[in-house]
Length: 225
Ligand SMILES: Nc1ncnc2c1ncn2[C@@H]1O[C@H](COP(=O)(O)OP(=O)(O)OP(=O)(O)O)[C@@H](O)[C@H]1O
Ligand SMILES: [Mg+2]
Image 1 (cartoon, rainbow, N blue to C red):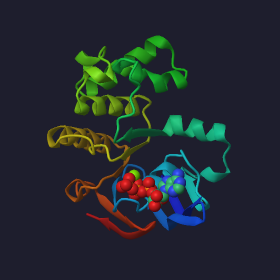
Image 2: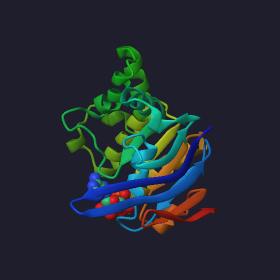
Image 3: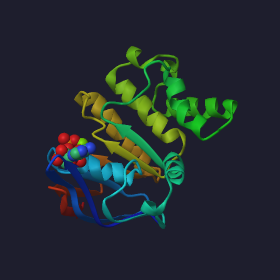
Image 4: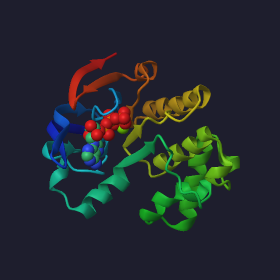
């Protein structure tokens, strides 16, 4: 089913200034594709990602996710789709500082009302898959940046989403930790997940099967490698 976007726009008005953050984006992404999105700062990458992730709604145009017109759904239905279908990984990790690695990974499973024992099992296995089982009881401040991002990936995959959205996941990491994160994303891609990753790094971008280049809210390139 996948993602289908048609003539998407997103307009922000700040004072007298109108900003066309997205200016007529059309795009199809099939299930299981690994796509990177590149473009300069302010080109509209995060705006697009937030709409694809059902965190925000377009000003006009269509977004069909697995056959459903997302803009027509209620907030409740939208957050339900988000928690079931989409895993997020952010540049700044977005872990909750007062919770351990394990508790952070468990959080989306609590929202999904998975019972405690099952939750623990899934979360420990997700932490194991990112090589951090022995850090389960550490808080984010007791982990390196690369380890924190791996916890964030474990949290994203714990609910077994179809789609992983990653906005500059290596942006705050040294090259070795960045490479580990990219390897995990590439493994998830091989396991059949749809991956959409924003990056500033052209070298990183080329690792995906497809590269989408955005400039001033428009797609200027949509290349398959
Ligand atoms: N909430 C907002 N209100 C007003 N303008 C916004 C808002 N969010 C984004 N913009 C504007 O929309 C444009 C696109 O922003 P966006 O965050 O999508 O860029 P980006 O490509 O992700 O940039 P970066 O690489 O710096 O993260 C920018 O000009 C930005 O200033
Ligand atoms: Mg951004």
